[in-house]
Image 1 (cartoon, helix red, strand yellow):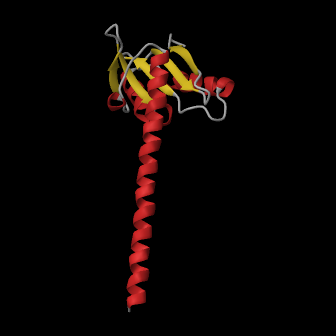
Image 2 (cartoon, rainbow, N blue to C red):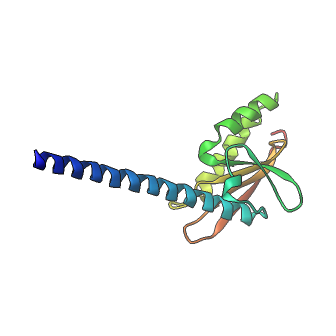
Image 3 (cartoon, rainbow, N blue to C red):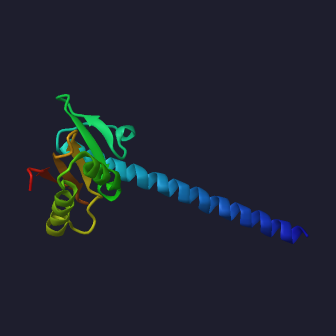
Length: 145
């Protein structure tokens, strides 16, 4: 009976340690990703705090211009908004441009790209950071084709 209690206690302790370390790791990953987005934003002249970043959140640059923030991997809502907002296909070319940039310039180890667009969702930047700290930014603009 004592042996079984000791094993169960050990098992519970082990699960708690692994669960705690998994939570810690996921928090570190989230902080790391947000840190990369902050670096990317700084590269295009926008200062932001981690708490300000989220899907379709509005951030403001030093000149008072408002930008819509998104992560490349979480751009579904952004694409939906473009399709709702415009009769012409803005989303299709936007996706194509992102793909062309990634195919031509992305390297293993690059951060998840940051996407910021003006409030009209037609102009902005596609930015990612390299492992060595270098940041690559690409100005994107939809001009009816």
